[in-house]
Amino acid sequence: MKKLSVIIAGLLAASQLQALGLGEARIDSYLGEPLRVSVPLLLNEAEFAQLNQLQAVVGDRAVFERLQLDYYDGIRRDLTVSVQQQGREVNLLLQTSNRIAE
Image (cartoon, rainbow, N blue to C red; front, top):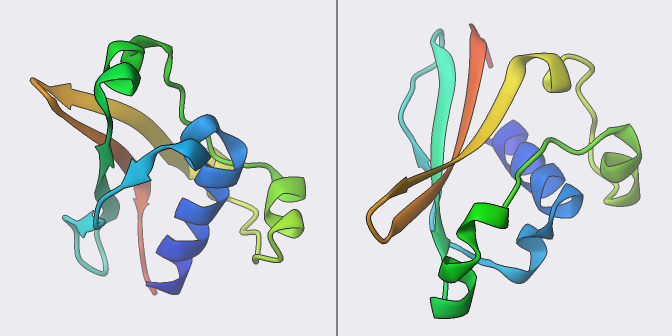
């Protein structure tokens, strides 16, 4: 769970998500499986209207260091981040292609 917190913090620092509200992260995977986490974005009407401009990326080493967080060398290669919308529900989706062992 610590790694997930670090990943999310890195994402927040690397993007404009700092100004948006985040709901509780839901982990949809188990140890030994690729990571799959969704985090609801709590958007007001103005933010929802600008949803097509939202981009989410994994922060680079400098972002992690600025936040005094551990940086994992493979994180930028293996982690994909996307914004998923279903009606008014919008989630930040974090996924890895490799299994998570710890």
